[in-house]
Length: 212
Image (tube, rainbow, N blue to C red):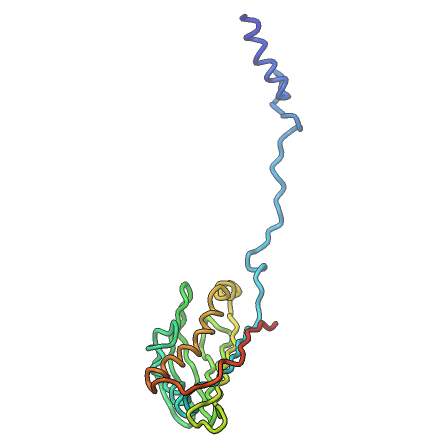
């Protein structure tokens, strides 16, 4: 029995590829560290480029009502999704400068927007912005249904590009929905200020595109 006891460790060493004078090698020979896989940086997996979104609607409000609503930048913080600050800094010669703060957690950005007013359109361009390389919003107002002065056509478009590829990836998870809600937010605010809409046609179309 004692001999069997001594033979058992020897048998285990033999089965494991061990002998008394050498290291335990295992059935496949000496152990080597696993080969390192080439690093694939996370950011390289994320696409970049300018993204744009456009929407057209016929609304049961006059072009002047919607123009005045969009031009009232100081009230954006009251109803525009994720806008927590909208302060007018200056306004002269058809150009307004405003400080806006928008937050889509975990991204929060405060920036200067230059807003250009013309007869039938309002354009806002982002300035001094750390988060966006490019941010341009355009509102166009036109006639609505034939013979109905209390309706208008609204063309809304926005294009943007983030400076950081990581921010671009994070924003892609939710920003499209934020943009889609913007026109609806202005439409809802018009209802609060001007009352129910006149009878209109349903929205014509909207589209979102990614450009390289």
